[in-house]
Image (cartoon, rainbow, N blue to C red; front, side):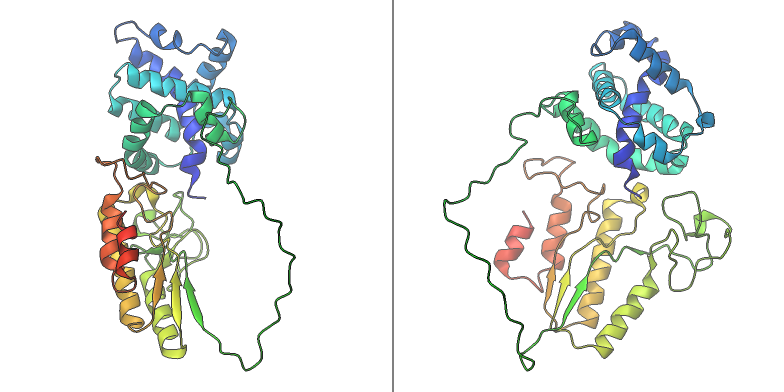
Amino acid sequence: MVHWKMRHLAIFLALITAASVGALQQQPGGSSSIFSQITPFSPETLGVFASVAKLKANWGYSKWKINQKITCDSCIFGFTTLQTLLKLHMPADKIAAIIENICVDLEIEPRLVCRGVLESFRPETFYVLQHVPYSPGEMCNFVTGASCAVDPPGTHWSLPLPDVPKPPAKDIPPPAPNAPRLRVLHLSDLHFDMFYQEGANAECSDPLCCRRENGAPVGKPAGRWGDSRNCDSPVRLMENMFSWISANEKVDYILWTGDLPAHDIWNQTKQMQLLVLKMTTKYLRGFFPNTPVFPALGNHESSPVDSFPPRFINDTNSIKWLYDALATTWNQWLPADAIKTVSQ
């Protein structure tokens, strides 16, 4: 649900053109300079985009219907437009403001959410679009899942297998009743919310509710131990869970497979992500001091979410801040050779 940002990115990009024309008219070359560089579409197609961009919230389109409108044409048009605006040196803040207004006008999310996602993703998105070797059509293959262009070389991987016949399958007998057993605690997707508030509104318009800023409750207020509507888990629930397990269960080892932060992806910083990591580590060390822990990252630990740049990205977009923190916080559980790979 909260990963709408990825689904609607193509819509944002596809619709900024018509909204940008007025701003571009004040620049050298006028608005015609951008349309002259967007060649794959007929005047009729461009007219459709311009008409759509003028429509406001009275479309009656739901978020789901908007998502269904993503096509190869709209995606290619959007990526081409954004790359063109960047080449024309249109200020990044102005581009972001246009996209933010479209996000609000189409009622995709409230303004604070639209703005927060743009602030989080804008540096990486603009960097990639200015350096990526792929064409808009090739990028749209990844966004839409359709065949918008011929896939570029290197995007399809093949794994050669040895020319050895597959061995016949063998049934594995169940262990004997008296065989030794291990009890494993698997922790995944805790997503605890440090700002959860009992009694808050659990049916707000944001992707994540049960917080003070969500206003007065609509219907039943958020519960003390959490809420199954549109909220993440309160800290007290996690503390109580760890306390009960440590007091009542013998755990031989723990598998910890990440996804710690809450789903407020529009309102996260690197500092907040590290704080959540350190808090969870402190809980595990405190409640299970002698239990081996085998940790792994989830997609929510980075900031922005889902962003894990390769090692050769060593500027402000680097992910080193997170990997270095993991090497420090996980050093109690992992051997030195494993810690070395974590930091890379």
